[in-house]
Length: 351
Image (tube, rainbow, N blue to C red; front, side):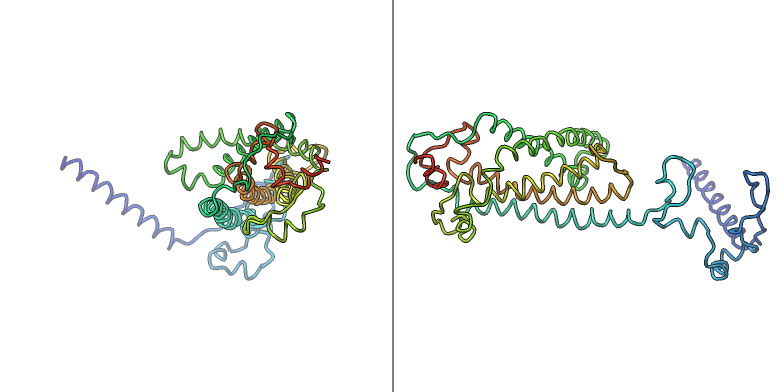
């Protein structure tokens, strides 16, 4: 044991001595001019970028004497495209400066502020439930059922909801998983798990887009701003003061979710997702690094905002309000619920 340790120690000492000798020799040795490599054409003409005195590269005098020197090392960290003879023109940019800017935005602005937004939305819903509880009807259920949604309406809604939850879950793992899941699972297991999540995310995206388009066509006429919307806005739907606010088939809160949350943000997420998947139909797009970085920023930002708004929509549509889930679960709502929450629609049905 002692002999082996002494041998290892001697080896390390010898290696350290040789390394120091080599380093000192490279430092003090006079550098000789290097002959240029033969040109592909067979005409050996030294390029303009090779200095007459190579030592000037070390002390910076070459850069001062020839500031416009087209050296590859001075132009590597730049966005302009140079010439390459291969089909992949992206290879002409050795270092993309905007890539670092994208990384700062994604890992700094989007993940940090997006995480705070999601946390505020989640704990805001929890606080609302703890303070207010489920919003109860002022009168008991009548037992009289009114049809609100058809079977096809509910099928489209639940398909869209399922695809959205799948996209939100896998998307959050892609964006935040390395901070909490990878330390627990380990790099290899997390990589395999994330690959599955990515495939689920990519294949759920087109289904989500189709559902948005169909749902929009089904209910766009019922979401036109109209009677009762201004009163709903001024009283915030009576959520805080408990005041009864008459509304049509959809109230203004539902209309806001329909136009901004589902339609606008949903289509922005879908369009940017199609770019990231490189499946944009009906038009030609160059899927360059810059294009993908912009699409990634738009996709992540819109997805986080839609997820935050969806928490409120899911809360009100399930445990936040008595009887609200019945319409999408069975297609029918109680007459008492319809009169209390959508009185203008209820009155039209009874005329």
